[in-house]
Length: 476
Ligand code: PFF
Image (cartoon, rainbow, N blue to C red):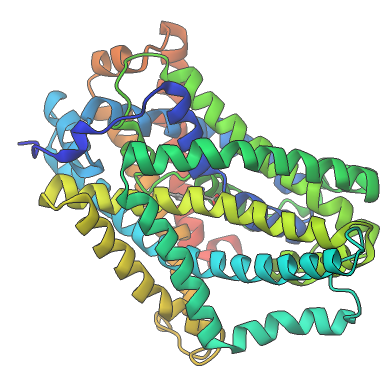
């Protein structure tokens, strides 16, 4: 039986509101921090092309499938899958992947908030620096005037060593996420997305234009769009596939949950395409914002996760208006992170409401509070517990700290498993008429979608899963 849930009462006020919220969920640290980092480390163009292929061939059909389950189910992820399964005469046991998704969302939220906390700190540092520039009557000076490159780079290490500071910013960010989710779908999530997403796009476009004027756009374009096929190793393909899932928020039942707040039938094909296109465009624009700046000051595009925190502040120092731009840059990432973290918290929160009958406030507080506490393990990976290896017995995690282990476990295992089960369930088990009427796909599009979801996705995702778990197969 499908639990009578309070979630059924809540809904988006319009399709646009849903699209903004879903794009807000998709666009996040994954686009602005992880994508440029991976593209930089994997040699640019070849990675980018594989990533785009993954988004449209695998990601888009999965986006549509998750939204379909939510729209048809009208309650939390577990309850929605159970309802679609029952209506399709399939085993209600399929709902297990809703539970795996909710657990993955909780785990991702725990470390996502830690990284968002760093962003918050940098936004604060550069904000204060900009205020100083204003007070000094020089609003267009570069950022962090008077600091040497070594001092700027040292700032990140100092931040990692300061456990109290990390706890405060993590707590603040999680508190903000919890506050928005507790207010509900309409007054919280939708309102945040409709206010923040336009601000986000305005900032993004402004910063890309700035990069084009002040930076080296030509070199950035060459780097991002000229494929060097010799760099295309199986490991690069593997990480491009994983990044496509992460960036589109797939495999954690996030779009099932958001889809359950849609009230009207049909039009899900174009809606899904808009979400996938918006997310990909933002990743590419983020690349076109960051790499011109990186190249213009001769920084290394492959510097990894610290690219955004160590390299860019240095670049902002040498560029005109850098104090203001640096501050806006970190605000942009912060806005993107908030609209994603609320979707992460919403998945388990909806589960608590739908399956346990908890009030929204109680459910959000339990999972938000829990993710804060659990996140402390990740936070300590950068200082006190940097040597702790929680899954050290497993060769792929033998060398990774707690943060990277949870990131790797969710990204390499839980998301692909979630995506695999979603594709098998929707491709093979869900009633086809229910899919057709709910999604409103034309017969031709339905045929194409069915091929991708029933055949290509399971195959390709199995490949990611196996190669991710047994890297020896790839010879790496
Ligand atoms: N898509 C988000 C990003 O790219 O930052 C991360 C994410 C958000 C994953 C929400 C999963 C999710 F449910």
